[in-house]
Each structure stands twice: as structure tokens, then as C-alpha cells.
Image (cartoon, helix red, strand yellow):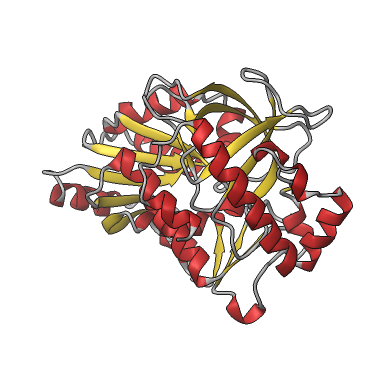
Length: 358
């Protein structure tokens, strides 16, 4: 059985870290060897790093490389004819973007894993869905931006999805109100990218002094915090402001990136981000890349078992974070609980919704 299939048969937060560590050490080592054989550029990188599989004793020993290398090199472990979909990272105008190559199997696993992770927050029943974005983000189904991929990927977990913004990024208030009347007797799943929600949904409702009846809504959002940080808007203020204009109480932030689509990290009721069975996280000290201890800030390294068509299973991000606990979060979910503190200084600006240009 495929390693991901094994995990799909288990509760998404049901393994303690010791059990997960042993499983991941074995499977990530196997994945590293697979990509070494299939991707010449990755093989050259491993040679430069002096990788020795016999020295791998834990997840932290798996070789990693900076995520921005996806901008400079074509890193794929499949033939061109097997490329089913190409994902592109976010980037402001003029910036080079990462290109992530997926075959059908990898894309299918991404969808399955995303649904599995979110089921713990949304339930297993598909709810009516309101996407707080414009349909234009999902136009090209073979070449996806992170924003378009997010909207389409999450829409698989809802039913009868309706977009809250028109093609000009204007609030379609009549369409929203009509949809809410139709769904007045059920919970509603809402999805969007953080700064787009703030700029084009919250601010417009606030300016027009309109309050939507979304007390039964469950919002999942992520990406695009840089714009809100410039406006000094915290996660807590974001939640309180949305509650003011539409009564939302269940609001879950998530952390993730296109280089590891599907294996996202959800924010729990206690305000911590969590590693699921499908990915893990290591914090590394900036001065020497050694593994940082719990409660210490450092660079975020992400590992996942999903990237089978490209060598993205172990990447060093440009984000700063810290692990706040392991197997002991008040929410009851096992695994690592952590915080993200933003981009490292002088890192290239990127973000799923920060890239929207007026």
C-alpha cells in the first residue's frame, strides 16, 4: 500500500510524534531516493550536499533545499508527457514564480488529503459553499496560480459553490443575499484568501453598513497576511471584524504553500497551527541550520509525503516560526503545534492574495 493511502485510513491528527517520526524517516528516505533517480537536477543537488542515506536517523536528517530553487530550475521527477497540471507560486509583478509539475496521481492525492485534513473542522458532510473571491482566478485549469488552485481545491469540499465577487472584484451583494436565503436552514462553508477577504469583503460591508446573516458560517482562510500586517491587523482583530459585519464565529486560518499543495496546516480552536499526518515541520536556527528547540524561533522547514512527481518533499521556506508544543495542545490534536511569525527579513515578497493587482 502507498504510504499516503496508509495515512488516509487513519485519523488526520491521530498519531503521536514518536510513531509519526519513525514512519516519516523511512518514507521520506524512500522518496528522496526516488527523486534522486528521476530528477537529474535534484541528484546533482544531493551530490553537492554530500547526502548519505546511511546517516538518516530522523526527519531532521532528510536533505532540504531553499524553496526559491523552484523559481530557478525545472525540478520534476516525471516525463513531460506525464505532466497533468502545472502549479505556479504567487509573486508580485515582475517576479519569477515557482513551477510545480503534477501528474494525475499526485494531483488526486492532494485533493484527497486536503479533504481529509479539513474534515476535522468542517465535518464530513459537504456544505453549501461561498467562495470569497472571483471566478476569474480559476479560468485556466491546466496552469494554476496558488490562488486559483486554492479556490478550486477547497471547492471540492463544498456543494453548489457561489463566488462572492464578480469579474471586477466587486462584491456581488445581490447574489450573496439570494444564496444565503436559499441556505438559511444549514451551515455554510466559506473560503478565501486573507487579504482579499479583508479588502473586498469585510471593508465593503463595513463601508456600506451592511450585516450579512452568516452566524452559521465556517470560514477557512489563508495566505496574504503581509497586507494586513502593514495595516496592523492581527489574527484576533481579523476575526472580530468579520464577526461584526456578518456574525462569523468559526474562523480557521491555515498555513501552506503551492510547493506542497494539499498538505496544509490548520489553525485549531486554541489558536495554534497543527501538523497533520500528511506533513511535518522542523524549525532551524538561522545561524547554522541546526534544529531549534521548542519555543525558539527559526526558519521553517516543511516535509510532506505528497510530492511524488517533483522533489518538493523537504523544503526550507522563507518564513520564521516556532514550535510551541508536541502532542499536548489543549485542542486534543496530536503532533506538533506551532506559530508562524512572518517572512524573514529581506525575503522576496509573496502571498496567495497579495499578488492581486488593481
